[in-house]
Structure formats: C-alpha cells, structure tokens
Length: 116
Length: 114
Image 1: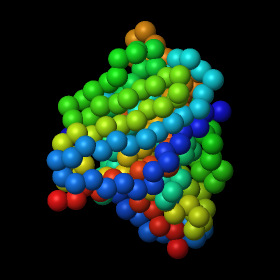
Image 2: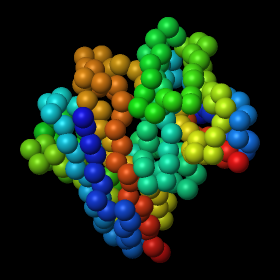
Image 3: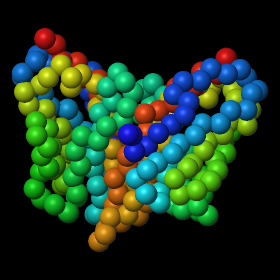
C-alpha cells in the first residue's frame, strides 16, 4: 500500500465550482504540504502544516484553503475554481530527523485537475 | 531567497551509456540538503538521491551518483548504465535549515533511447 495517497487522481470541474482534494498518509509524519505543478515552472508550495493546529500559507495560497483533519489527513479546497488553477497537485509529507532540521519530503501520486 | 537552476531543459542518452544532469543553486545558508527527484510519465515524484551539505562525500544510490561542489554551488546527477525506465523528468531541489519549503528547479526531461 502506498504511504501517501491522494483522491481523486483526476478531476474535471467547471469555473465557479467548489472542489476538494484529499491527502492521507500512513507514514506517521507530522508535516504535510500541498504543491502545485505547472508545465515549465516546477513545483510551488500552496500551504503547509507542521501539525494539526499549525497551518501556514505558502507562496501561492490565493484562491485555496486547507484543512488538517487529523495527523494523517490534509485537504486542499478550491472555493471557486478558475481555469488558471488547472494543474497537477501534489501532497507531500515529512518528518524531522533526529539531530538536524533538514527533512526529506515524500510525495503522493498527484491529482490532475482541469477547470473548464 | 534560494534559487535552483537546471540549464538543460531536455537531454537524451543511449541505453547503457552514462549521462550527467546539471543543477546549480544559490543560497546564503551553510547547512542544507539537496535532492534529485524523478517524475516518470506516471507523474509520481520519486526521490532518487539526497546530499547533506555538510558531508564532503558524494552520495550514491546504485546507478545514481552526484557530484556536489559546495563552493561552486553545483549539484549534478550522474546516471550510469542508463535504462529505458530512467526516461523521466528530473528535478533538482533544495531545502535549507532555516525553512521548510523545497525549492525546485524547472526540470530536465531525460529520454533514454534503445
């Protein structure tokens, strides 16, 4: 079984609709992240959460909101989808290693979203 | 702010040959991690290899190795004995000790030809 799962894997929606992308992990990590990937731009951070009560905006949070329902679950919502939110969305998790602040992030399989 | 630059948008290599992908970065930090992620057509982001900046020894993982030049802020990936399954987009990424966010390069599309 995959350690980080995302649902749905693909989604087509219309402008103005509200949609939610979900992420679950079995790695036991405290930290979770939502990234967006656009062609030619690499990945950019939308929101991140260091624990259930700690949620922070990333570099491109406008138009998005998140909910950390539990340590293992982190959802991303588009309140009113627009076409330029068409992208590939990734959830990632990480944990602080002992003895250092650096961390490795592990990614889910991605959700491809098309907003018409 | 950190930046990561991958100057080769596309590369190709013959099966069984060796290829090197380039990455440079800019940071004022002294303690950080560098990563190479692979994204095959399945879209999954797969960690290939990572390097701690405080370690002088270059990281290796089977056919994958890095050439880490801290003074030059260079972090290249060498793939030996290339296989068809290595065909993918490869992303170089950076994370510093003072933050949480992975900074990605724009990627290099590697095609392994039979």
